[in-house]
Amino acid sequence: SSCGGGRTGWTRCGLSYQKIKKREFTPEMISLRNVLSSANRFCTIKQTGERYITTAAAPLCFRLTQAVAGEPLKKKKKLDPMLVRHKEERRKKKIEKAIRRLEKNAGQLKPLEELEVPRTVLQEIEIRKRPTSPMLEEVEEERASLFKKWSKYKYQQHFTEVNMIETIIASRERALEELRLESEDLWFEAVQLDQTLLPFTAKGPVATPPIKDYESPDGEYIDKTPTWD
Image 1 (tube, rainbow, N blue to C red):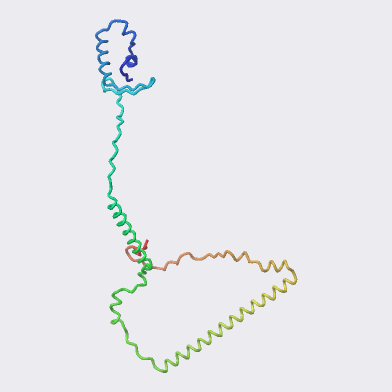
Image 2 (cartoon, rainbow, N blue to C red):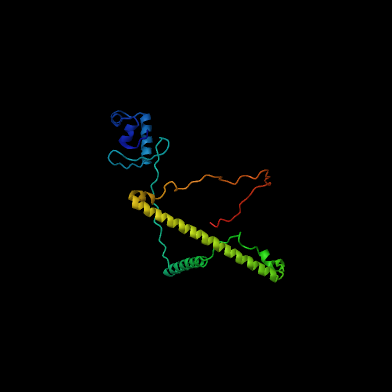
């Protein structure tokens, strides 16, 4: 336990001030009194009622408290208004320049490397050109005749399909009218959506079946496609 100076400190050290005052001091008591009085000089007591804070040196196992010191206020620097304005203008110009750069590149699309023609191929266009021989007149007439026949065939196919669809729709409308004349409730049930058709689900292969007796090449596949994030 720690003890300070004064009567309270003497009492805490196990000695009664009244007893010491009444009887004579022995050499041990005198030395103890000198030690306590010397320790009292190193103690800082701020008494408030019965509670106080004490600090002393180590021989008597006194606990040292931290020094509570305040940092002096920093002196405010006086800035030149012209320098502050130039700094703000430079910052504003920098932001405007970045905005213009973004607006300039806004219309550019991300390149698709798969659809771009390599530069080596563009440089070899003249070498890669193949001479085309003129087409014979008989071949041109034959191709034109085949094109006309194909066009006529597709027209007849389309005409037949459209007539068939119109016939089916007309038959359905007539059947619904007759059903409505017989029973309003049956007609109302007939025009409702078939709940068994939606949602449509189907089960099938979820992946391409492996090739039989396929020998995979050595090495590993590294995807280097840019993500443009």
